[in-house]
Image (cartoon, rainbow, N blue to C red):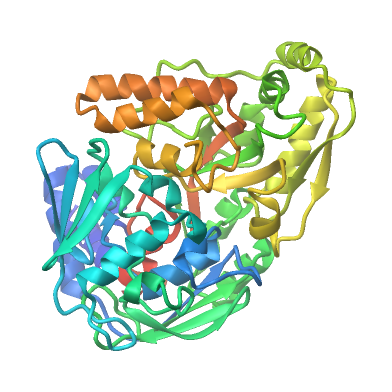
Length: 527
């Protein structure tokens, strides 16, 4: 046992095992979880993070329309670029707690209507300017502005007023919201000089790496910012490279061109994991692969047609053939068991060709082709998923026509603009944020154009309800509304499947997003 334990400690210290993997393996040797946790921390500390090197990420989501303006970030590459040079007030930690970033502490009034964020002192932007409370206030004001078209606009709707007093930034809400700190962790709300009012796409932030080169849709390079306020970044530099093609992305990891890739396709994940010098990391979470219909655009403005399409999709087949088991069934709502207030009693929608045909007939559709737009970059296996959907829909007499779009421009010209397409959501830490971002009638990222006054009312009621049981009941009703009347077809929740070089140490699972919720270049180092 001693030799086995020493071996596991060494691998943990070298970053070959995550904390969860270490605890799982040592438990088989009779070690308690508490003792294993202490051993893991000691092993990692003994090895210690090593400094130096340039970390390279191969990312999907590179488009010529990508911008350094946080308000516009809608695909994976801008997300990973932003994680290098910018910080929000708070982050969501891997265990679901709130992690302090530019705000060193968070407090609220007893009624959860006013929240106070105490700001860190002596934080420097990459342009040499010291961050002030006014920079924070201006950032939040910009993302609250309808003209900004910010991806965070929906979650800013409930704010009544904001102010700065000394080193405290305060937010007062129109209704109580116990989840506000989670909303402030949204990756669009990166703090910029003067809030980005002057130059939103300048790429100036407070993060550990400053922008050196930015070629939209091609690559971005970064160097270590010497005056970074934190101590959680160990590389000399970072490069994020756009590799939209899955095969090319996998090849880049195998050849050592990059140290990590996102969106490993499930069909090659197990094979890639057997390759030398590569670890495939699979993390269950809140991400979901979906088909979205604009409920305000014919023929999808008829709920009978929406129901017909929901019953015409074979979810089990999708999970088996598209996810290869790296995920779970969806239920036409964006919430799953990863959310603490999830209602497991909501009936699972089943594949039912008879019901699909019945609803299709009731819709009165004229039989003309229903165009579904897709692209390789929508989600791994999106083109194959669309083809499977087309086949099962045809069995119910529903004529789907697949239109394959180019990856470049998909997130700017197809998603949120075309009435029926494939899409992907990484999920959000809490239900309020997910619903406020994508289902509130006035949300800028309401990509199904779902408009339901009763739903909107319940969203704000849930925010103000501090009784957990009552809140769960409200969320259950909201989920049922989206499931039965919304424009979301959600057949599956995906695991985050990342590929990482074995030269990378410090990896740990984070259910909030791919590549350790975008924190891989801050929390890892070269072994």
